Length: 161
Image 1: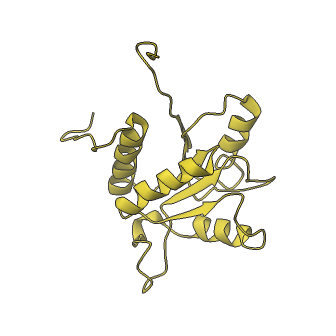
Image 2: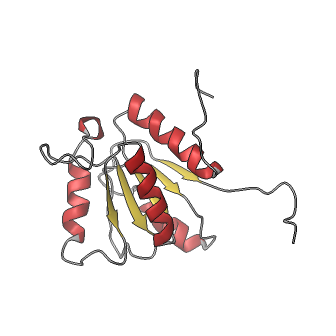
Protein backbone atom coordinates (compact mmCIF):
# COMPACT_ATOMS: atom_id res chain seq x y z
CA UNK A 1 0.00 0.00 0.00
CA UNK A 2 1.19 3.52 -0.70
CA UNK A 3 2.65 5.44 2.21
CA UNK A 4 -0.06 7.41 4.01
CA UNK A 5 -2.88 5.43 2.36
CA UNK A 6 -6.26 6.10 3.96
CA UNK A 7 -9.14 4.06 2.54
CA UNK A 8 -11.97 6.26 1.24
CA UNK A 9 -15.20 6.15 3.21
CA UNK A 10 -17.45 3.93 1.16
CA UNK A 11 -19.79 1.02 1.61
CA UNK A 12 -18.33 -0.58 -1.51
CA UNK A 13 -14.90 -2.17 -1.48
CA UNK A 14 -14.65 -1.87 -5.26
CA UNK A 15 -15.47 1.86 -5.15
CA UNK A 16 -12.88 2.37 -2.41
CA UNK A 17 -10.21 0.62 -4.48
CA UNK A 18 -11.20 2.57 -7.59
CA UNK A 19 -11.08 5.86 -5.71
CA UNK A 20 -7.57 5.08 -4.49
CA UNK A 21 -6.44 3.98 -7.97
CA UNK A 22 -7.77 7.20 -9.51
CA UNK A 23 -5.97 9.29 -6.88
CA UNK A 24 -2.66 7.50 -7.46
CA UNK A 25 -2.92 7.72 -11.25
CA UNK A 26 -3.92 11.37 -11.28
CA UNK A 27 -1.26 12.46 -8.78
CA UNK A 28 1.67 10.45 -10.14
CA UNK A 29 1.10 9.96 -13.87
CA UNK A 30 -0.42 11.62 -16.90
CA UNK A 31 -2.38 8.48 -17.75
CA UNK A 32 -6.10 8.35 -18.39
CA UNK A 33 -8.42 5.50 -17.56
CA UNK A 34 -11.39 3.76 -19.17
CA UNK A 35 -14.03 2.48 -16.75
CA UNK A 36 -16.17 -0.27 -18.25
CA UNK A 37 -19.46 -1.52 -16.86
CA UNK A 38 -22.25 -3.71 -18.21
CA UNK A 39 -24.87 -1.54 -16.55
CA UNK A 40 -25.67 2.14 -17.05
CA UNK A 41 -26.81 2.32 -13.42
CA UNK A 42 -23.26 1.37 -12.39
CA UNK A 43 -21.90 4.01 -14.76
CA UNK A 44 -24.09 6.52 -12.88
CA UNK A 45 -22.45 5.48 -9.59
CA UNK A 46 -18.97 5.76 -11.14
CA UNK A 47 -19.86 9.16 -12.57
CA UNK A 48 -20.95 10.32 -9.10
CA UNK A 49 -17.62 9.11 -7.69
CA UNK A 50 -15.68 11.05 -10.35
CA UNK A 51 -17.79 14.15 -9.69
CA UNK A 52 -17.22 13.93 -5.93
CA UNK A 53 -13.45 13.64 -6.48
CA UNK A 54 -13.51 16.55 -8.97
CA UNK A 55 -12.22 14.45 -11.88
CA UNK A 56 -13.50 15.14 -15.35
CA UNK A 57 -14.90 12.41 -17.55
CA UNK A 58 -16.75 11.64 -20.71
CA UNK A 59 -19.29 8.92 -21.19
CA UNK A 60 -20.46 6.66 -23.97
CA UNK A 61 -23.47 4.44 -23.41
CA UNK A 62 -26.62 3.41 -25.25
CA UNK A 63 -28.12 6.90 -24.84
CA UNK A 64 -25.18 8.65 -26.53
CA UNK A 65 -26.15 10.20 -29.86
CA UNK A 66 -24.62 8.20 -32.74
CA UNK A 67 -23.45 11.42 -34.41
CA UNK A 68 -21.51 12.54 -31.32
CA UNK A 69 -19.72 9.28 -30.46
CA UNK A 70 -16.62 9.78 -32.61
CA UNK A 71 -16.29 13.39 -31.48
CA UNK A 72 -16.33 12.24 -27.82
CA UNK A 73 -13.69 9.59 -28.52
CA UNK A 74 -11.48 12.02 -30.48
CA UNK A 75 -11.64 14.62 -27.71
CA UNK A 76 -10.71 12.03 -25.08
CA UNK A 77 -7.77 10.71 -27.11
CA UNK A 78 -6.42 14.15 -27.99
CA UNK A 79 -5.93 15.75 -24.56
CA UNK A 80 -3.47 15.09 -21.74
CA UNK A 81 -4.82 14.09 -18.32
CA UNK A 82 -2.41 16.36 -16.43
CA UNK A 83 -4.11 19.53 -17.71
CA UNK A 84 -7.45 18.48 -16.29
CA UNK A 85 -10.01 20.89 -14.96
CA UNK A 86 -13.25 20.07 -13.16
CA UNK A 87 -16.32 19.11 -15.21
CA UNK A 88 -18.32 22.09 -13.98
CA UNK A 89 -15.69 24.68 -15.06
CA UNK A 90 -16.56 25.99 -18.51
CA UNK A 91 -13.78 28.60 -18.74
CA UNK A 92 -11.17 26.06 -19.80
CA UNK A 93 -11.21 23.35 -22.43
CA UNK A 94 -12.34 20.26 -20.60
CA UNK A 95 -9.74 17.53 -20.40
CA UNK A 96 -10.99 14.08 -19.66
CA UNK A 97 -9.29 11.91 -17.04
CA UNK A 98 -11.76 9.04 -17.29
CA UNK A 99 -13.90 7.54 -20.02
CA UNK A 100 -17.07 5.82 -18.78
CA UNK A 101 -18.02 3.10 -21.24
CA UNK A 102 -20.94 0.72 -21.37
CA UNK A 103 -19.60 -2.61 -22.59
CA UNK A 104 -22.74 -3.08 -24.68
CA UNK A 105 -22.60 0.23 -26.56
CA UNK A 106 -19.06 0.46 -27.89
CA UNK A 107 -19.59 -0.80 -31.40
CA UNK A 108 -16.89 -2.02 -33.73
CA UNK A 109 -13.62 -0.16 -34.01
CA UNK A 110 -13.91 2.01 -30.91
CA UNK A 111 -10.34 3.20 -30.37
CA UNK A 112 -9.49 4.67 -26.94
CA UNK A 113 -5.69 4.78 -27.16
CA UNK A 114 -5.72 8.04 -25.20
CA UNK A 115 -5.95 5.83 -22.10
CA UNK A 116 -3.47 3.23 -20.95
CA UNK A 117 -5.49 1.89 -18.02
CA UNK A 118 -8.78 0.02 -18.19
CA UNK A 119 -10.99 -1.14 -15.33
CA UNK A 120 -13.56 -3.87 -15.88
CA UNK A 121 -15.69 -2.76 -12.94
CA UNK A 122 -18.28 -5.51 -13.19
CA UNK A 123 -16.82 -8.39 -15.14
CA UNK A 124 -19.17 -9.95 -17.69
CA UNK A 125 -17.50 -13.39 -17.58
CA UNK A 126 -18.19 -13.67 -21.29
CA UNK A 127 -14.63 -13.94 -22.61
CA UNK A 128 -15.45 -12.23 -25.91
CA UNK A 129 -17.12 -9.24 -24.20
CA UNK A 130 -14.22 -8.79 -21.79
CA UNK A 131 -11.65 -9.15 -24.59
CA UNK A 132 -13.49 -6.59 -26.73
CA UNK A 133 -13.51 -4.15 -23.81
CA UNK A 134 -9.79 -4.70 -23.20
CA UNK A 135 -9.01 -4.21 -26.88
CA UNK A 136 -10.42 -0.65 -26.74
CA UNK A 137 -7.12 0.69 -25.41
CA UNK A 138 -4.74 -1.97 -26.75
CA UNK A 139 -4.79 -1.00 -30.43
CA UNK A 140 -2.51 0.34 -33.13
CA UNK A 141 -1.47 3.82 -32.11
CA UNK A 142 -1.10 2.99 -28.42
CA UNK A 143 2.26 4.35 -27.25
CA UNK A 144 2.13 3.33 -23.58
CA UNK A 145 2.18 0.09 -21.68
CA UNK A 146 -1.43 -1.02 -21.12
CA UNK A 147 -2.78 -2.09 -17.72
CA UNK A 148 -6.06 -3.97 -17.25
CA UNK A 149 -7.80 -4.22 -13.87
CA UNK A 150 -10.64 -6.64 -13.20
CA UNK A 151 -12.57 -5.74 -10.10
CA UNK A 152 -13.96 -8.75 -8.24
CA UNK A 153 -15.69 -9.16 -4.93
CA UNK A 154 -15.44 -11.99 -2.48
CA UNK A 155 -17.94 -12.99 0.16
CA UNK A 156 -16.10 -14.94 2.89
CA UNK A 157 -19.36 -16.46 4.16
CA UNK A 158 -22.60 -17.41 2.42
CA UNK A 159 -25.37 -14.84 2.60
CA UNK A 160 -27.87 -15.43 5.38
CA UNK A 161 -31.51 -15.65 4.28
